[in-house]
Amino acid sequence: MPKETVPEPLRPAHFAGDPVEVARRLLGGKLVRVTPEGERLSGRLVELEAYDCPRDPACTAGRFHAARSADMAVAPGRWLFWTAHGHPLLQVSCREEGVAASVLIRAIEPLEGVGRMLDYRPVTRERDLTNGPAKLVYALGLNPAQIAGTPVDRPDLFLLPPGAPLPDAEVEVTARIGIKEGRNLPWRFTVRGNPWVSPAAPSMELMP
Image (cartoon, rainbow, N blue to C red; front, side, top):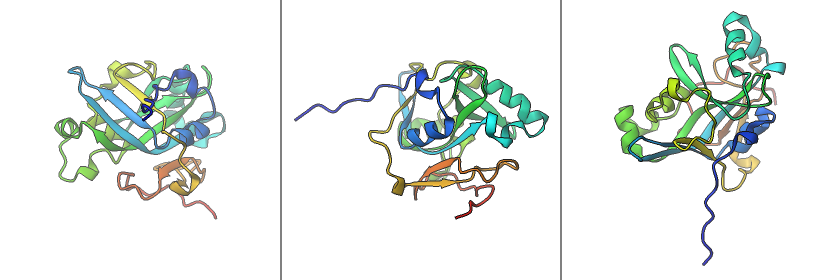
C-alpha cells in the first residue's frame, strides 16, 4: 500500500499573486499552530476573505482603513494582524512588496488539539470555538506581537494546502463581512454548509 504523502507547508512565494485567487485555492487547507510545549493545534480553513487594495474600496475608505492598508504592503507570505473592535484578526500578505493585499482567515474547523484550544478560549458550544476571525486567534493562543511580519512558513505557525482543490459545488462565494465600501465584491469563500463558518451575514447579498 503506497505511503500517504504529507503536504509541505506553503512557502511565501505561494502568496505572491491575486489574493482572490489565493483565497479560493486555500479553502479546505489547514492552519497549524505548534505550542511551545510541542502540542499541535490545527483547523481546516472553512472561511476566507480577500482584500486587494489597488482595486478594493474597503481598503481606502477613511483614514483608519488607509493606515491599515499601508501595513499590508509588505513582502508576500507574511503573517499580519488587523485589529477590529479591539480584537486581532489573522491575515496573510499577498502580491509583491509595496502593494497592499491579503487574505483574512475568518474561520477554521478544529481538527487537532481541541482540548488545548478550549483552555485558551473556554466556550459552552464547541462550534463557537473558532467560528470567527478573532475567536480562532484566541483559541490558538496566538500572540500578535511575536508573529506579525514573520514568514507564513514559520515552524510553529504555518498553512497546509488542501489535499485536492475543492470543487465549485462545495464552495459558497459571497460578499465580505462588516464592510461599507466594496461590499458587493464576491471575495468571501466558505465551505458550503460547514457549521464552523462564522454566523455573521455578508455586507450585501450578491446579484444573481
